Image 1 (cartoon, rainbow, N blue to C red):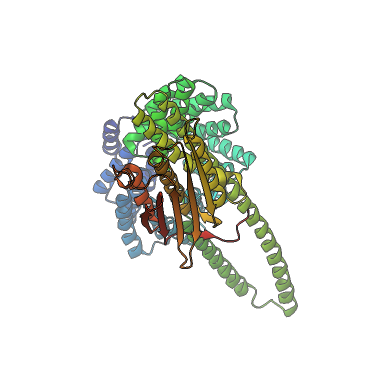
Image 2: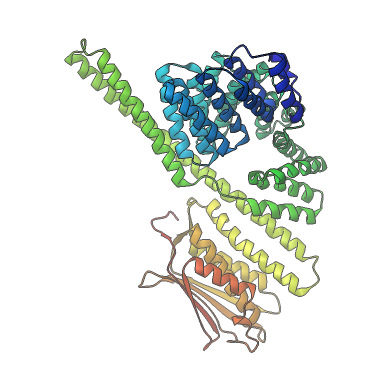
Amino acid sequence: MSYWRLQTFPKNKFLGCLLCVFSWTVYGQYSSTEDLIHSVEKLKWMDADSSIALLHYAMQNSAGTEIDNADLALELSKVFNDKRLCDSIAYWNRVSEQIYEGLSVERGLAEVLYQKAFEAFCLGDYKAALDYSLQGLGKMEDLQDEAGIALGYLRISRIFHFTYKMAQSAENGEKAGILFEKVADYPNAWDSWSFAGHGYRLDGDSIQAQYAFERGMEMAEKSGVSEIMGLAYNDLGAFYMEYNQYDSAMIYFRKALANCGDQNSRQKMVIQNGLGQVYLATGQYQACIDLLRDALKVVYASGEVFFLTELPEYMARSYAALGQYDSAYKYMEINSRFSDSLFTEDQDKALEEMQSKYESDRKDALIARQKSERIYGITLILAVCILAFMLYRRYLVKKRTNEILDQRNREKDFLLREIHHRVKNNLQILSSLLNLQSEYIKDENASNAIMEGRNRVQSMAFIHQQLYSHENVTGVDMRQYLTVLCDHLHDSFTDEKKYIDIVSDIRIGFVDVETAIPLGLIVNELITNSIKYAFKRRDQGTIKVSLWQNDHNQLVLVVVDDGEGTLSNGAKEGSSFGTDLIAILSKKLKGQISTDTSKGYSTRITFDRYQLLENMPT
């Protein structure tokens, strides 16, 4: 199948499959299995289903050698990469592996390792994915196969990208891009430069990022595949948008939409997401809503939760700017529900250990090879000189590494602080929307319920405010936090008719966020409960909040008021939402609850599960 036929391949998948069979039947055989695979490599960017149909047909009707069958099976496994069908990736890779092992085809076995890496990547096991990729890269380097080496660097760049190690992703992506250009594999060259660009961009190097994205666009245009060109234009659009160059961003996003193809709804949705942000930033709110409403249908159909943390936020902000607060609240609630944490610290540590192991293995192999090459010519003086040089170089490398680690730690602190800032802002928006909503509700009970919900949101927002504002980004100062929370609740419920004094006695310092959030919500509920029920017949009263660590290394929380004890209607001991919430949160921290009504109403909770942080900066 010639290249111009690939360019005009129909986007309808059924017609695409028919053309695959027609091409095989009418034009006879391809000149070689290699020629067929080369055509499939380009075709899969336009229509992966048609590529799969063509490979299945070829395997069923091919009279080639065992190696040909192994190559076709391996290519079929690769096509399933783009569809993220993990079982199919694994099945066809095992078929090719059995043949390659029987024939001792080293390059084939190296590519099998790459596919095992992609299978692990598909399943979310990034540690195994990196391990297999490094093994495959080692084999390709022994074979001195430039295309295979490039593919290894691309696999590694992808893994580092999805595990948020952007400098390593950029470095490996650039290596892959240069090698793919050299062997004229332009689709993979674009893919490599794209990962390099995103790596540089997220690592803060805008000049290198722009260079990589423009280089990727050149490769995409050389490939002649419109879908790849659409992806390349989208990269540049996103880059210019990030640096507020909205006119340039809009030009490239629109070019990307024109090239993405009607059938690729996911790619179209991603581009619409970027263009929607441009519309939002330039005040084109209705255009943003209309565009992202269409994109959101694709998100719901595909189940890609990540985009549910972005698209609804942009739509909510656009509705809010147009004064349509009910719609803004609806989409902000969707955004809040699907927000999620990123990569875990344990997985990140495992990847670093695997990379270190690989570098160590390569260094050992290099030393052994150098010894064998110069075994007859080495002298004692030369050995001393080399040793001195290596020690000096090691000193320089270690010094540079420490500088890089210090810089990365500073960047990590900045990113954590920014995350807390954005979470705080989102919670403040939600609190404001709840406050706005309460103004339109006439029913007193419903209004009180919304106000209590607003206070719960505000109690969490205070935590993220403290983490953002202070030098420490991992621990919460309970003295300061509970003092601010008590002051907020005092202001919320005190007016000219009723004055409730809230006193705090906090004798612990910093705790981790997983301890602070449940404690804050529990204190919020207990104080609210006292204000609602303890002073119905009085205009003044006092509530005291105490928190300390007892002799049994337990955390003790006491909230006591001087109002009425157990009421006749049992309000304080009922099964309200607040009471259930206190029980659930206490259980999370392994808390035991007891009450005392002899003098007012006292709630004492003793926690066994908590984390105090010592030697924290204040």
